[in-house]
Length: 224
Ligand SMILES: [Zn+2]
Image (cartoon, protein in one colour):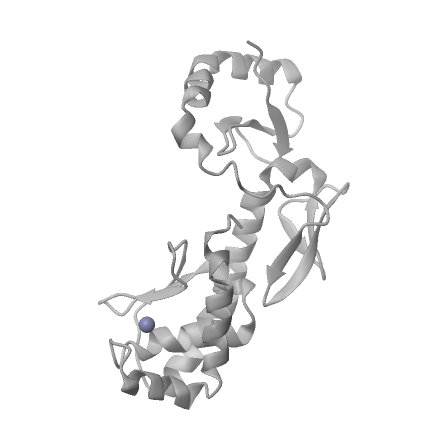
């Protein structure tokens, strides 16, 4: 059996072989690694790779994930932007009225985009939480940007606030609604009339944002 794999060269220092969730094998190698060195490395891990590829349950689940190609549109702050794979060589994601990723990093596009979204969620959400906490007169402990399952935001008994990084796909007004919603829970744990009246003082139009989340809730489960 011949083992097929793709090679992604980058500025990294070590060679890494992995089986992606779609069962493709990727070798991440330092720039300029000779081909026979990569072949040897794959050869030496062959048994491990076959073992992983044989395991259907674990790697089947995301086979429905959308393939990322040039022209795919991606949401950011409520607007759709085009994704393009370009010939230039650079690291990560460049966002200039569209998302640009080097063609060389194509196999890693999903993880690069996720990283980009998480970083930008951090930059957008943290200062907004600070601002709205001041308006509401509440104190919180930490703001965490995470991969929440089926939720946009949550708050913990220790007053830590969690936000789903996918929230940055939503319009700003929706992001603010989720932030205010979670901060309001620090004053009122349940969705009582008092809870909603506090939310309303901060965001008179909150119903519209709530509606948006209802309509686009499935974004929570999309891979990117
Ligand atoms: Zn709630």
